[in-house]
Image (cartoon, rainbow, N blue to C red; front, side, top):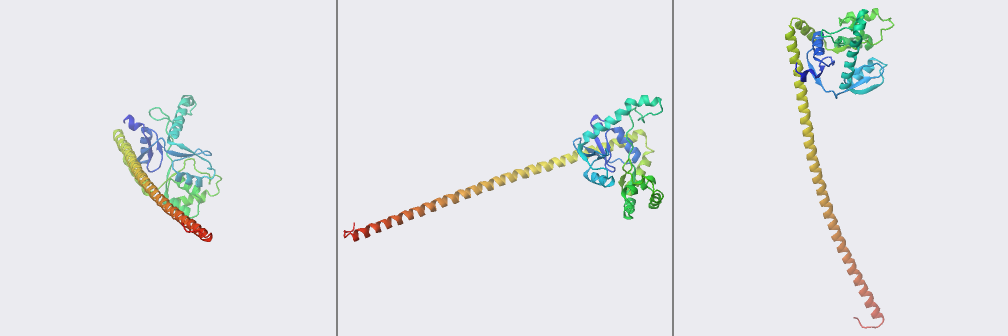
Length: 298
C-alpha cells in the first residue's frame, strides 16, 4: 500500500468506526465483514464527552448517546486529528509496559507485527428488533443490552433475557462498548462477506482491502471536487450579485442625482417667480403712494 493511502484516516460507512492504519482497516474487515470505507479529514469535527470519554462522530450520534446515557452532559468540540493523537498515545502506552507485564502473565494483546492490538469493534445489533423492543416499552439501554447478550438473536430470546435479568442491579448500566445499530439486512450481508473472506488468501484479502481503501480515496477526492465546484459556483454567483448590486446602487444614485437636479431647477423657478411677484407688489405700492401724494406716475 502506498504511503499516501497508508496515511489516510478511514471511517467504516456502516458502523462509523474510525480506522487509523491499514492494519486496523484489515482487522475491521476481517471482524465485521464491512469493507466500504469513507476517507475523513483530520480537520473534521467530533464531540468528546467529558464525563464518559465517549467520542461522537456526528451531532446525531451525540444526541442519541445523551439519551442513552444520562451521565453524558458536557461535550467538547474536537477534531479527527485529536482522536488520532489520542488513539496512537493509547496504543503506545501498553507497548511501554508490555514486557514487564508479560513476565507476570498480564501481557497486553499484541498484533502480529508487535504493535498493541486495536480496540475491539462494538457489537452490531438489529435495528428492526431494537425498534420492536422499544415499542414494547423497554428502555433503550436494556433493549440494547438484551440484544448484545443474546448475540443479536431473536426477539423472543431478547425478551426472555430481559425477563430473567429484570432485577439485576446493573441492568440499566450502559454497555462499555456502545453497540452499532444496523439494519438486519446489512448485518446478514456482512456475515456472508466475512464468511466468504475466510476462504481468501492473504494476498486476496490485501488486494480487496486495497481496492476498498482506494475507492474511499476516490470518493473523497470526488467529494472535494464537487465541494470546490459548489464553492466556485457560489463565488461566481456572489460576484454576479455584487456586480448587480453595484449597478443597482449606481442606477439609484443617478436617479437621486436626476431628482436632486430637477428639484433644484424647480426651486430656482419658484424663487424667480417669488422675486417677480415681490417686485410687482413693490411697484404697486410705489404707484399707490405717488397717487396718494398727488404726484404724477413714473
